[in-house]
Amino acid sequence: MLLAGCAAVAPAPVGVPFALMGDTPYSEGEVRRVESLIDDLNDEELAFVAHVGDITSGRGPCTDAWFEARKKQFARIRHPFILLPGDNDWTDCHRSGLDPMERLAEWRALFCYPEKSFGATKIRLERQPGEYCEHVRWEHEGLLFVALNVQGSNNNLGRTAAMDIEYEQRMAAVFDWLDESIALAESRGAARVVVLMQADPFKRRRSPDGFERLRNVLAEHAKWLKGRLVLVHGDTHIYKDDEPLPGLRRIEVWGSRFVSWLRGSSAAGELHVETAGQY
Image (cartoon, rainbow, N blue to C red; front, side, top):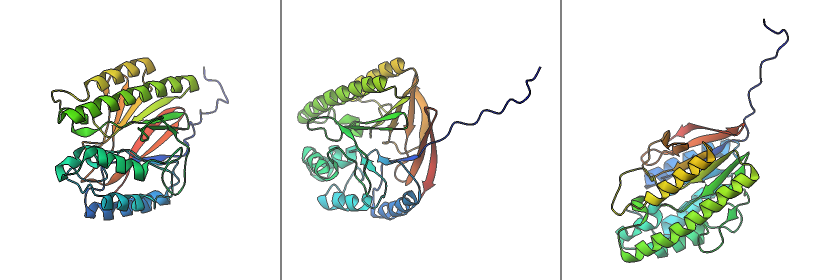
């Protein structure tokens, strides 16, 4: 027997969307295509734009001039803009004869802003105390976003003894920030925890494996959060939306040679992602 007068359940409202991108621009040609991407971003109403790193190619340029030009270019974005460091931006700069740690210091000097995002408008960020100013987090409509400095090229492990020490120190900070952020998300009742990094920790393995412990930690957190953990990364440049570990949703952004962005939105605690423009 049907009950008369039952109204259909209204769909959950979708809030203000946001943009995810990465691994571009790698060349002067892509610089011009990113200009078109920025024009389209500026035509949208977005809460923020997050770029997961790699603003140059694996062979550079890693120069001050290139980084400063990218800072000027990204400053055209009228929305709050969060940029993560990528391996092409510092760890791989040894390929062009530059010191990775000096390049990371320069990246931080240009793109780390105390307590607020980069971009024409700002959002307040929580930042990890100490030298890892790129480790930030922010909230948006029930989602807690957590940015980590985790890199492609085997996460900077296995190339030199000095870089192995860098890897150990950085990853200790990564795990501290991730653990603290997930505990905070639980205390605040966040519907999802969205972790952003440059590296794809599930691609080809090396010995030693720079991602082994990270995968184990992500697996434990995914088990604890029961499907509420999302990983957003770049590195291999092909869009993915899958589940590489039980309970862990993985979203990979488009990257060079593709210049594109993803539109994300939250509705009733769910995260929805779709490809937006391609240029």
